[in-house]
Image (cartoon, rainbow, N blue to C red):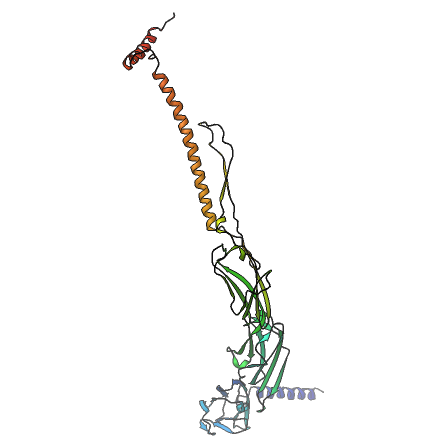
Length: 435
């Protein structure tokens, strides 16, 4: 029983050893699969550890010999020898085309003949995409339907959409094989409602494919959207007065831009102006021009109305400063002179219906304020002069009284002075002392 078991173990060991030797066959050539973009260059390298005095050979998918060692076998200038040694045979194929794709064989003619396969994959570069289905212009709120198509890709490319910087989800993608049986045509569609914000917006279709590597192929379509007009009235000057010239500009915006303008005044049955002119001119304003003016701007997308309230200010009624004073207290050197308060009034405030804003002070108002300040200063100066005169008069009377002491009975000035001095001296003589 032991002998058959030992024989079985020996046979098994021999089988395993033979398998190990086959897996490490030094005369077996090795290659690698390659991927190349159409129009590029591919390198085919065949290596062998032990050539056993035999030469390496490359052949194409049609089993045509390309190189046998250093010898060219096929007359194709695109195929060049890169390196030939007993252990290596490397060739290159330039300007690769789709028909070059397939399995290339490296052989070494030992006993037995050993071979290795190298699969060459040729990538078809997709053509620049094209957008169709766009009919310009598109009206606001209508549906835009665009189609993007790219052919010549292998494998089939992918298409993606953007509107501005936002991604668009497509409604479906179709892939069809081209007539050459190798490349594909890819078609993608998008649909979306347009708004006036989409006017001049760019829609982009981009093709993604591994053959493009770091480059990008895309096409852009700019949208033109028709939308309803808007309008506003701008006066020039902004704050008109009687006797001045006034221009009312009806600024219409839209796509297309309004080309017809109708000017009317509320309460009047007769239109003031109806043509392509957007400006209404008043050569010389008067009060009868006051009222509400209406501009109707019209385009192929409809009409819009803008209003402006005109209030003509009379030049003779410029704002005037009003000074209010409280009763002044009796004059005194330590008492305040007076208390004043000043207000100014403006009699004109124009306002537009669509573009109302606070009305700043007019030049006439500034002049009135300056005049009021000057009047207050003059009034204060007068009060100050009155107080100063009153003060001087009081002090002057006191001085004359002292000068006349003791000289009332003097016949002349010299005697008065002598009497005054004598009187003072006599007053000194009349001093009494008590012990």
